[in-house]
Amino acid sequence: MFLDKLNWRYATKKMDPSKPVPEAKVAQILEAIRMAPTSSGLQPFHLFVIRNPELKSKLKAAANAKDLVTDSSHLLVFAAYDTYTAARIDEVVARHAAERPGTEAALDTYYSNLKAAYLPRDAQVNFEHAARQAYIALGFALAAAAELEVDSTPMEGFDAARFDDILGLADKGLKSVVALALGTRAAEGDWLAPLKKVRKPAYDLVTDLN
Image (cartoon, rainbow, N blue to C red; front, side, top):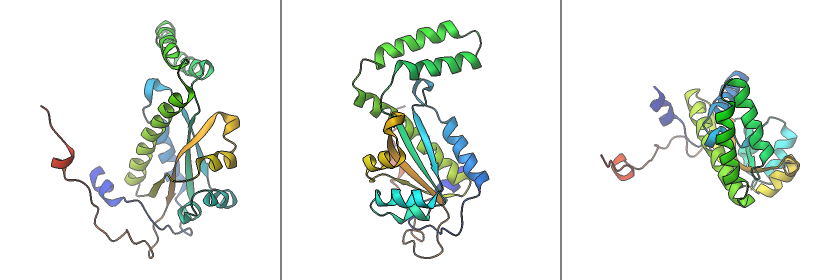
């Protein structure tokens, strides 16, 4: 069952580069990311899927030399909008209108109010909002990977500015937020693999206010 798969997964510390993740499984993880909920359906981020060893090596140098960057078979980089613009929001309206005929008036009203709220805000505030949506999608990716028994490790702590430069994100109006390594756990050398998963007990984590 799903909870068993969540117990199976852990933040893999060493991956075996000779055992790439099947592309069919990667495609399912990418679809889970695409289907993740985001605020007002904006999907304010872009996902970069990196297989190229040379490019991964460049990113590794900007990620505190994390071997997972190069040992993973696929490195996913989530990059959020640097801010919201009328054009970006109008694109969402057009897509919804095309897929849901007859909703144009309601969409115009809703997203006009959204633009009135978002566009005057500081760009950093909008970026942080967009980044939080990317993290929702990251959660879906982690859950999908666990369901498919694909090893994964989410990664922060990299030099985001260098990632942005290597991937040419500034010209795209994007900023890197978080990365996800997908691969296959190595048979040896991963100190975390044999250890029991540790989480807070439910009574420490959950307060039922019913």
